[in-house]
Length: 489
Ligand SMILES: [Zn+2]
Image (cartoon, rainbow, N blue to C red; front, side):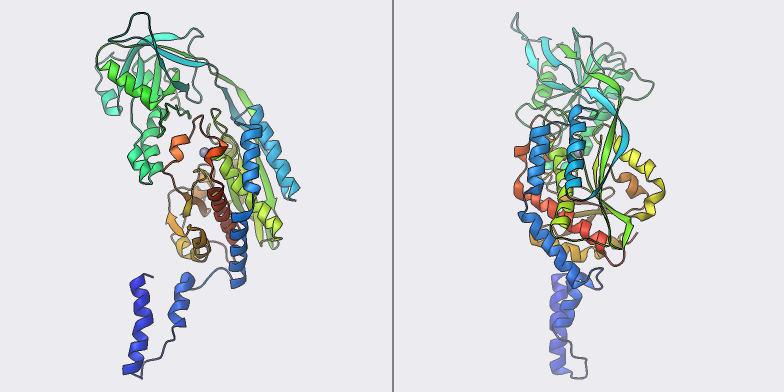
């Protein structure tokens, strides 16, 4: 209801009652009751009080921050298939066991790619001072193949987008290093549309290497997908298409992309490029599953989750250590406050989201027959900045259903409820099977400045914002698990 409608609802009957006594007299309480939660609620007033207690506890409790510090600073980066990813699995499992949750490690085969050396320098360009070179800052894209150990030297061709690639004369990129200089739209990110800016640019990181190889390029560079200044390259997965030669692929910083664009507009530019990543045999790894068993319907589960793997340049604090620890906090607070909801709250730390969501795929296969028992799924994977509410994917009726939860979260500025096509990479399979799915809506203005860079470290997480996200995850997980009637689907 709008403010205008509210005024009308309160004002009209009172005035009418004075001039026309025949009309039924409404008290101020009636329209107020209608406004609060907008009608029938899936939760009793006592359950709403539990939500408020969970929210307030999440805002004070240091558990999520402490777990994040250990994960990022003691274990460090958690690349799929790496010893640190394995250590993180063991750490999170033992922390969940310590809370009394029922822990299972569910197997998944995951990629095992290691970075190796990465270096580049411009070795010839218009205006070059004889005997000098210029360093180019870059990082290999995940899954990239290697150059020979001594590197390759080739001329650079720059295109800004797919249209310019299509307009190249035949053979223009043959034997060359092709740079996709597509800009990440920092202005769009700055007004809060970080995900949209990312979506536009990430297509070049994914498809650029094969598109370049298809026109004869011997290596492909992409302008980093992200908003960082300070000459930081952003890594991330690339996708080689079947049937196209696999060429070495790296992301250059925005500054170096500008440099190469400028110099190539003046004349021929040659680059020496060395990348020595290796793709090892797929590794055995695990999703960590920890069930806080339901008191009435233990077979019905609500997933609260983040992904445990990270890229290797930083320590995976905002992507996605934060998502893991705010989900751990949900179990920790249910334990600390002695709350046992009707249904099971299932914490999941997904493995290998960054390199293809193999953990989530394994879960979908292993639990294929249990979709109907998945009452809801939540994933937090957009950092740890201030949450403004909840995204949902599923029936439009979820918006109204969530109203009482939104009212509880209004206390921390997270009352928005908004429909979205998807709510998380790892729970997308469940979403597609009709499981109501959710994610915190997070302030994305700064996330892509650090995403997939060496600067994704513990200090980037504001403890208050982290706690706000923990509050959203915990309150929502409890609400889904304890509602009298399950979320509409
Ligand atoms: Zn992520």
